[in-house]
Length: 378
Image 1 (cartoon, rainbow, N blue to C red):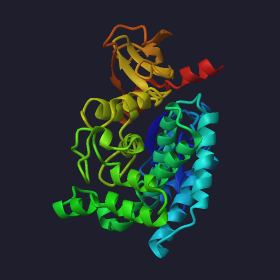
Image 2: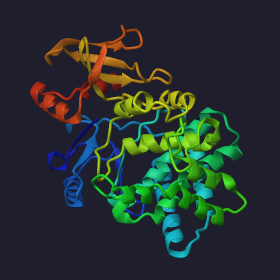
Image 3: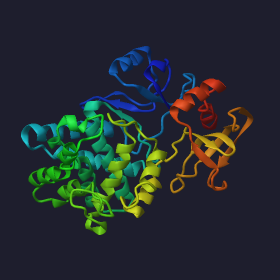
Image 4: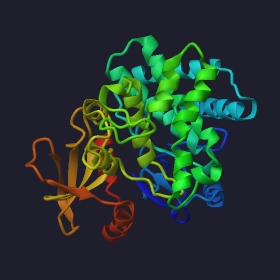
């Protein structure tokens, strides 16, 4: 997969991500072949770029399977958007649709548990909060399933993920979408959203304190450095610790006005090594054992040369099976070969090739390395 500028799209390329409009509807679904009409719509959408499965229109590679069905994600985004707008307008919402979509999310995760997490969507400006809430719910539900929580608890955790950011309704849009650093006053307003969420959910679900607890505590850190109450360790509810991991991961891997989207490998490094004390380490390890840190199709630089990721296994997400196709100077090998990084010496993997580097690399070698995935499929 490669993220390329919209102006570089060609007819026949296959989309590797979906794009959602502000109401949660998908007006471009991943796995679609781009037609001239779709390319023109994308140019008018204001998007900078789109991820495709290959730069070669002749390679009809399918995007990675998701942990939930596309229709589930679309329905979830729509229902969250409806609920948030209803709270903003009327102070309340009908909880039945969110209960129903929580059940559907869990059903999909259990049915699709053979798939690693590979989030591949674009959230337009107006729909970021809603798509983010859905991704957080999905990731939290996945962790809950892995922890073998009872069904009743899983439903509560999933619903808590959907509603964890409802307090952001109280934050002015200019603060939520500010491209630069927040001022002290703006940051103080932003830090008020967990408490605002707790208060709203206490009113909406007076007999269920757990949902409001998740909203209140999802920015707390294990070492007490979080907010709003500087809770530590087990003072933070398990479900809030789960949602905290899901929340940060999705935020890191998403485009925002003030940042680009980080790759899963960068998100892993930031969360696992650059944020000591922020997360429950046992939960974090379980999470990244089930998230594709190097998704299939990622181009890596190794001590043996350039390689494309062909397979990633649960519990071994840092050491995928790759196909080495070029030497260290970028010259194509006469006989590409497979290398299991699980069996390779430590330090074999040197880094991930960025999309901008890959774009030029493909032009220089005159072949998209994705062709080696197609050979595998054949």
